[in-house]
Picture 1 (cartoon, rainbow, N blue to C red):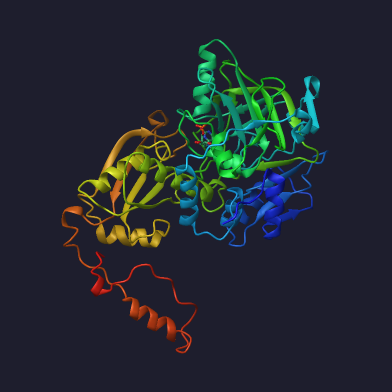
Picture 2 (tube, helix red, strand yellow):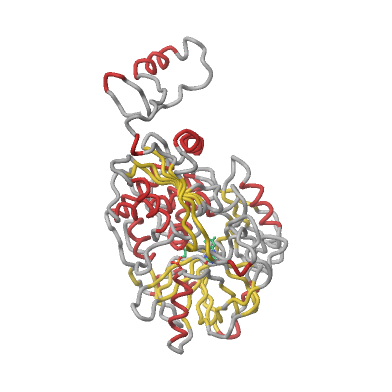
Length: 503
Ligand SMILES: Cc1cc2nc3c(=O)[nH]c(=O)nc-3n(C[C@H](O)[C@H](O)[C@H](O)COP(=O)(O)O)c2cc1C
């Protein structure tokens, strides 16, 4: 499929518009709770689109707010990944995984600041006022307005120079102060601690109106030494254009909509939260001391579009679909990088707490212990370790993105007393509501579930019932004549005795 020529949020929005997947809301809507409510309800609707709020209540300028850019749309996700719509979920996972296989990483380029739309407006000193922007408060118990949800935070490892892009929730705490919460183990947190250990403030850039490609890459777990800028360039097929920040020199996406720049100090932080999270619960109970960014500059395009992501139960949570695809591709790639053969597909289930909670690996078993090895690696590799709780291995005849098939496989192939292993004290987060009391966090545990045929007896395993190719074709040819309802379902598994397939 041909590459899609998109360079920023506006290009992407133009293409999404052509698909009829943008709802322009020109009437006044309150950023305080009303935008969140409409987005939540929209997400539960099969006809959901992205929502562009063009007239935020109480806002004096011309800033617009775009909620849930991707939502549950494979079309919008495909365009963000710079590929034409029309792929199945697993086909899109495979497409991205192959991009990762090609090791295609394209470093960002720095352009002339005169050509960078992000510098249309530059606010420094007394002009700085974070309250100017129509920042949504999503949930009734949120600690304040969260300007950072569909965002990108840019930091640098002071030892190696690697530039990190990560997505972190950010609450407005004052005219020139924004809190940013990072779970233990994330790169933004590790970077800032390195700066502080050197006795220096941590330089930070934060992007609040962002190309979905950068947002998705920032929210995806890449190896710690890699820059998401390079991965995004690889997916785009051309370098991301940047300009050096006027304060920190960090590379800012030149075509972004709204950016702040500043420093984070080891001052103990401020009280931040609660925040309605990807789990569909408020994060860690109570207020937390969270580090902040002291804002030294604000940049924005004319008529900027802020991006916002509602975190919620499924299917209203913005990250669910795109993380399922990106995590699937990352884990598949990580399995192959560890030398695991026979992987047919990997899927992280969107409804499993924002795509984090459950991963399914479809595997053609080739040797004793193969499924167990694949499950352990899928559970602990860089792309899949965070939060994940349930790792299923299914055989190659099961589509991992079809939960009905996965549950059937688990119910017919898994010997529960022997086919579940547990990993304890694994990487998780303070945001997992199941770990109580609070002090037990942020450790998690993982179940490795072998929902596949026992390898020792794989040749003796009961044969599954399936149609022959002839039966299928005959039914296909007579479908209309017989007045059968709907279309003939597509099948992938057949039983042609002359071919002696292992099914
Ligand atoms: C909308 C959204 C909000 C997120 N907020 C946070 C957050 O507040 N804290 C956090 O640790 N991770 C958060 N994440 C997950 C991280 O972005 C993700 O783990 C990412 O891989 C971190 O990248 P890094 O380790 O390269 O910085 C969020 C993800 C999304 C999609």
